[in-house]
Image 1: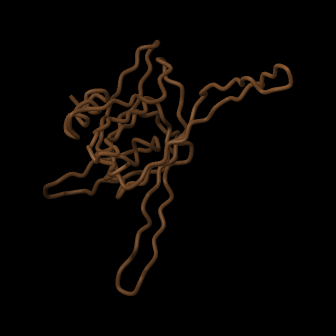
Image 2: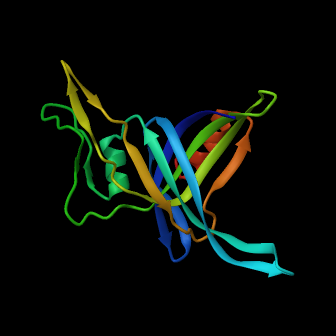
Length: 192
């Protein structure tokens, strides 16, 4: 049974002549929900003596939808291919900001998060879930004033799974703790 989703991480996917690396790693908000859906190519059905005896089916891709608590300007810029300017401090301090321009193209990214799941005997299992190559769309932002405060809709990120050089759409591995699973994800995405 699914119990929790933690620690979303992302980094820019770079393919240089078939050698994949990840740059600009970021903490990608706090995880709230995730939906992973695989897509299959269903070929023909095989019949013998008038009965269905087999069918062709192969994995061809999928999609990832993730709800997060907040996207920082840096994460929004990384996903959307936008221009990010870091905040400065001092006498002429400036805020962090994102410039969203016509013609911006989303970056391909690696993305990972930790899940905690329990089995029928209530033993917890800790998984690192890594998607090596995604391209998220910039999430919609919705605001609504309610009396003296403004409510904000949870950003939901959507991506199609893109075929990486290795052909691996998801790297899912079980670890002894959430901390070890997180380290595995951060090592994969170049946080070190």
